[in-house]
Image (tube, rainbow, N blue to C red):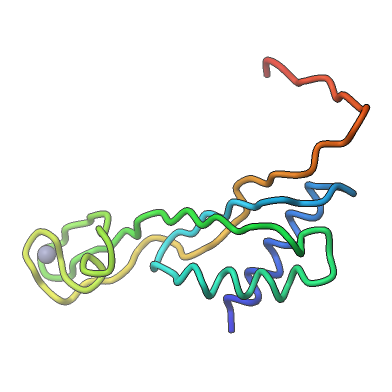
Length: 124
Ligand SMILES: [Zn+2]
């Protein structure tokens, strides 16, 4: 199950970013084929069990996949599952997903630590 593998990576990245703080929530961005949020959440639960991310809520952000039509050559962003099955321009069924399929950690929310104000980084 490659979903579990990618969840391992997401949990590892979240833990690394959080340091020793408890993770409240993670935001995961997924590109390519639409994924079932329940599958990602389940994988995350398994990967995060026993870690500081065990109680984190998982928010999934799905980017639209890019598809290319072999019939008319159109390259479009697929609007949901239907766009992955048929060309939005000519209706042809010979379409392929061209966008890379990947999932990565976009943001995490961690517990605020008491009595320890970190200076906010500005500029950049
Ligand atoms: Zn087409």
